[in-house]
Length: 140
Ligand code: TYD
Image (tube, rainbow, N blue to C red; front, side):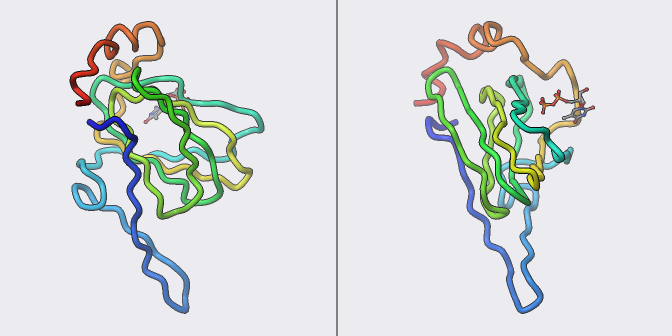
């Protein structure tokens, strides 16, 4: 874990036909991908997320359009703008996250390290702080 959020810049393979970007498990991102989902057609002024996890790690990339992600790991609060199909934001389990300011054309791709399990979600902010607060030593 690190104090700064981890943003990975991937290369795209571009030629006269256009561009292609690749993300593979344990290569461009530091975990095995077990689940893929994507968020699109997001309505105006919508904010999603509002949770952290116990176990799941995620990689977020806006493959089309732009959106913003608010991150809070109880020590740092940060806003990251996802505005390129080559910019990948790694979310650790202890990153409380909220996504917002979706452009109309935004397709937010999420690669997750675990299968879907509603029990892996921490949706209550006070519970999040009680689970992950006072664990600053993990980040040193
Ligand atoms: P939700 O967690 O509310 O989305 P967000 O975190 O962006 O606010 O998910 C919306 C619905 O989709 C909810 O009923 C749970 C379901 N869902 C799955 O069934 N599988 C999944 O992998 C995900 C991410 C969500």
